[in-house]
Image (cartoon, rainbow, N blue to C red; front, side, top):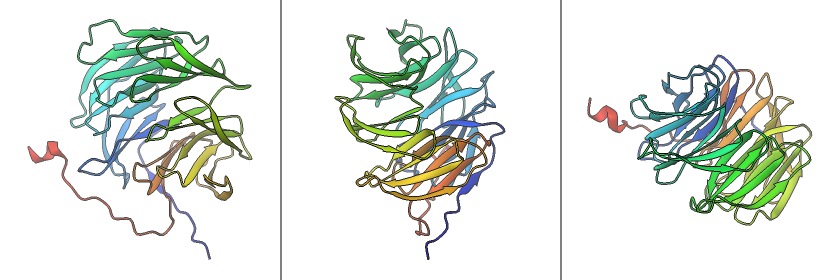
Length: 314
């Protein structure tokens, strides 16, 4: 008899959870940040869901959130026309980057020195965090709001998805669009797998996989409902997806066979992401909850026990 999947529900958000991201694996394990329409992004221990702190300062819904690889910095994108950079160790606001419209997406370079932003003003921007007063590098080109922007190819290129039903691949140095993909409907989510080789996107009921460097199509799978987000296991064994029917779907990546589906939320699933070790995945929903799911149900999963560096000094 197959074991039933029972998620761990993380309390705290009071409105829909619309974005989430894991850090890399650090000496203290890994961490998880969530973006919520209540304007209060939260930081958690990634493997347990334990609440660490809330970043307070935005005056509107937070649409995007991310952590740098070692979980020392966080960044958030919000409806108050700002992106903010935070000290993830103390929770203190480090920098506020004013924009001309709602900001939807934030992404650190691998060295954490630059921040990429995108939003409703249709322009991508790269901010040098060491020179916050300097004018950011700008990439105009999209004709409608940018929903997601990510670094790829060792931070030499940028991928952006917009409401204009396109995905663009940009050269960082020239600010030129190298290649553009067009779709019949707007892309709902975009993920670059950790090794940087595969781009995972969702649009309508389709989950599609592309070569992240060439944007050549690898394969697609059709889900039974409109999908809002999908994530590929770090070892490319499985993929999970969630959408409008409140369910999560798990597929074998090689065969694209549906392995299982289950309802764990009471509203549409907005975001799904695998942890960096692939042992679990997190989902955020319109129902205002964040949930953690085991990749292999029933597997004994050792939880990290450690002290964060900031606690050592206290």
